[in-house]
Length: 326
Picture (cartoon, rainbow, N blue to C red):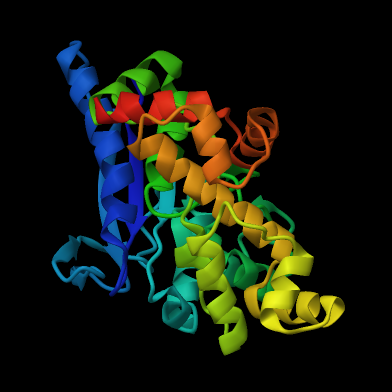
């Protein structure tokens, strides 16, 4: 079996799980290969930073980089660039970005985890390609790099360069890379050892709506967002919401869309889906009760909406969540 050298780039403020998620996937590949009598590891992983030495993660504890990103002798088979809240600042470091670009040119495969896509974009490595990133960065990436076709709902994408969605999606990305390198059987066994899905259902729409969008600067809209969150089973039509806000229909739609980033109808649907997701995860309520609690007139309409938005049926979502818990 060929041994592949993997370099994970790190920097102050890097998201720890962006590193250790893929790292543990590669570790379990090596564990299983060794268990089955393999003579050499499938992956040898090294951390690289602006310069060798300790690098503080976002959570505080440091990791140790053994190589510098600009080391001309560094030529990995696979280069992965994690993300973190500090990527915007790192992206302004021209020396680091130039070194990253050179390292990528010496690498057989290149990819990003989470917001690491911004660093690849800054280095010009995603130009003309489809890519994904953490949902919270997707709009910014689209605005600042219109040359990239950003698909904000994919868990991972390979379009010449790998990219993955937020944080834990780095595990999904690494499992897919292992599947491409070594086949589905080994990748599936690694997934079982990590107690994760081999192929995660749905996309990034499966995040909390309330955490994502309650950032309106207009107090009337903020109050309305709170009302929607507390009354998913109420009359949340545009007409009813406009009346509650004391605004004309068109004025309300324009203000809401400007403040929240999506139309009132889209936002209400997301809130209702978020409510349904929590009920399916945490209760044994039947589908009729779930659909009523989420503001749907009947189970059939709820079922169609849930599958369209989440990518799976309500029953599949519930059963898969319970598989993980058990």
